[in-house]
Image 1: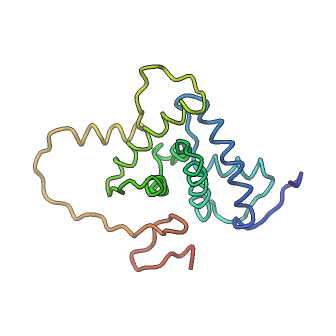
Image 2: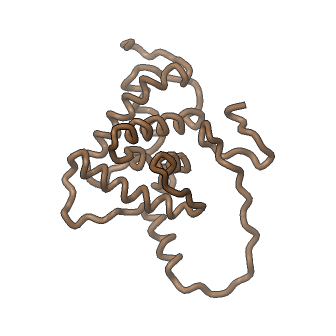
Image 3: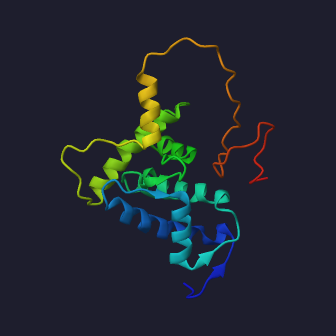
Length: 188
């Protein structure tokens, strides 16, 4: 590996970044209740590998966490990608669905289902990679997900039906939301 910063395309750096991402996530898993944001992971793999890119993190981070999920699946390990969360809400992204696909589990349209799965997987990671986990530890949701789960359990009062927000499909290559009009602007 070069000692100074080298700028490359994400495609060139990806194999090196996967190795470093795995190491960073194992270190994270060694600390009970620790998580890492997508941007922190992106910065750290570039720093450790000395391979940097001018490409936006959003264009390549999904592929990176997908590759880590595949490594965990092949090694029959808990999914380290459950430790990678959004800075805004502390939740895993739609790219976490790859973990469910690899495990042969059904995908749910409810993000809370994904978050509950990820919370259980995080606890498995902490135990697998030697964190000091209390014997009575339970899966922990991010604060905003816990608030949403609490609201979902509360009795609902009738109100006018709101028009559901239209969302684009998730690109199967880069895991970014595509425009409602069609193809992925990142991959085309």
